[in-house]
Image 1 (cartoon, rainbow, N blue to C red):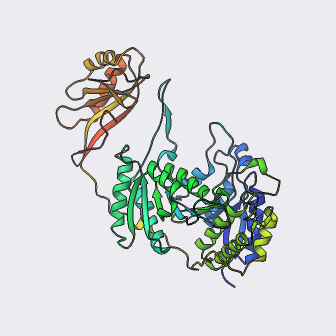
Image 2: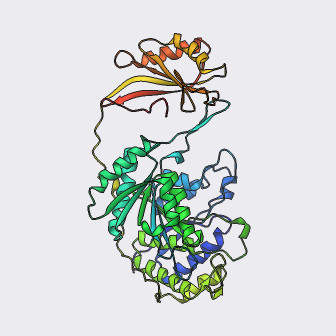
Image 3: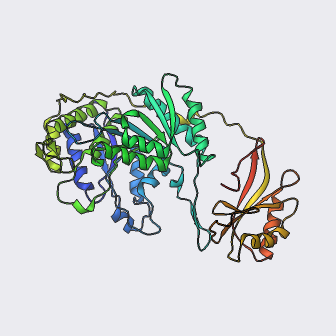
Length: 481
């Protein structure tokens, strides 16, 4: 008997239990070799005091099986709770989010009949790290973190995916014209790694025009790789362009674990009515089967699903007169797929998958770490102050600086307001005072002494950021950015 693979399954909330039942039914009928461990996850678990939506037994199951098929989750609003998706991705090291977005013309209504795009999104970094602070009465900050290893892993994964799936082009979406250091690092790494894949075309776009072109001409794209926030937005746009977000599955891949889910939410407004489309979770299950080396079963299910769509058996979200023949509920749609197991589509191309487990070794292929020469040359001190104009603040702070750390600029919400500031800049109570050395590298003690003088003068500093040069190049943005 061929190996049976243990998998963890959470039915989730809203329509989650209905569509999960349908997907498990199809996989069982197709001969999937699975040992299912069901765990509770979602709203009820949050309400029992687990802020990540999964209890210790659930996490234990996932760490044991290393494969997680998850129904959609409802997260209660309010502070303290964290998205289960975000927690799972960071806790389990699921660095790559993979979302295929395919049109099913002429059976599902779409303006883009030739669309076949895969969005590969970095999963662990960026603003989704959730590092936020209220700094003043007026201002809250969210910290964007981009690392070289994190960028290397996702970019190399995207090119490996393109190579193994016979894709021709990888496009990076970034905003490096504004975020020159964070997005600039990602783009630099993108082209460094692209050189290892000469048979694959590599290009990039600014994310705003890239998203606009994706919405207008998705056939121009093949594989898109991007940062966490951009990828979340762009992949939903792409899924909707195919005809419905209800058709799209999603894989979250790590070195040792993987999680599979539909990209849509729990849709509580239609829960219990038996009308939800199980296709998104079913396509996620197909990706799961490929991941665990059961590509033969994955192809059997996927082809039966395509034949069902071809035959006009559609759920309510995609049913349209003239395209659909039968408006099916959740269970009836699953039954229609089962009836077509062993069949292949006639008009749409059939699919085939390898039965070899994909190998992910991105950590072992990171570029060697070379430590830069790091020199501390100054400090940005952020203040809460509502005492007047920028010149008034400069008058208070300038006497507290020294040649070791001299006040060189003041900005408000990143806009330079002193010296030679623009009087039209709207100022809040959140100020950045930049102090730079006038005589060689700074010692940390000089920063401590500066903060002591500010405190003694009654100036409320909320945060500091050390300013460093790396190999002689500034590792910080200019005061006007």
